[in-house]
Image (cartoon, rainbow, N blue to C red; front, side, top):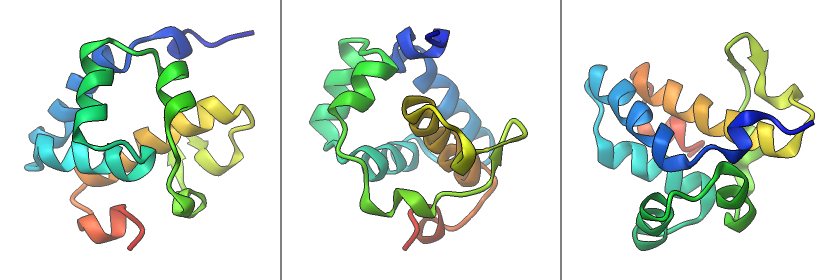
Length: 114
């Protein structure tokens, strides 16, 4: 069974990530930096995915995940990201977790597992 989020466009969720971060004094540029770190996309690739309304499934299929992604641990919505079995859902949860940490004021070097 496929989750509904898999077929949802990243562009439809992206403004919510930005709003969440900005409400807590962070910036759109910082959200973009987090996404680039996780996916390996550059600015142009990220913009293209947003403009083309790429689904999460296709977005992460084209991503080159950061080698330090296994360092992302903790819970999102009560679920430990490292325990999510479905690989695509785990990647989506990684992104959620990074945006959560950013919005909570964690220093960028810690968010990016520096």
